[in-house]
Amino acid sequence: MIDLEQVRKVAHLARLDLTPDEEAILPQQLSGILDYVEQLSELDTDGVEPTTRAIDVSNIFREDTQKTFGDRESLLENAPEREADFFRVPQIMGDSE
Image (cartoon, rainbow, N blue to C red; front, side, top):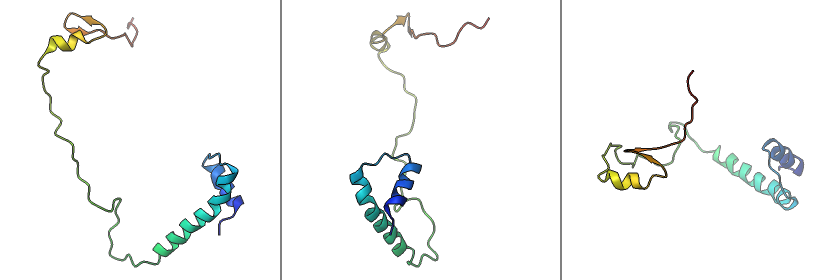
């Protein structure tokens, strides 16, 4: 069983600011979690490949392709500042002298 002093030590290491109510319930909750982990360690996992997910996940994103925007003028009209056919942005690097 985890005691209050251990909860406070872990909270300090994790930089957690616990309220007295949280400190009161955490020893029982953390002990329950550790008991459950102990039960899991009793399972026979020989021959089970390590994994990071319980199910297979695949990339569902579309292909990243370059497309030309059709109405260039309407795009440039929305720019906060514009210079001819370009967006005008603040200078971020000084002159190289």
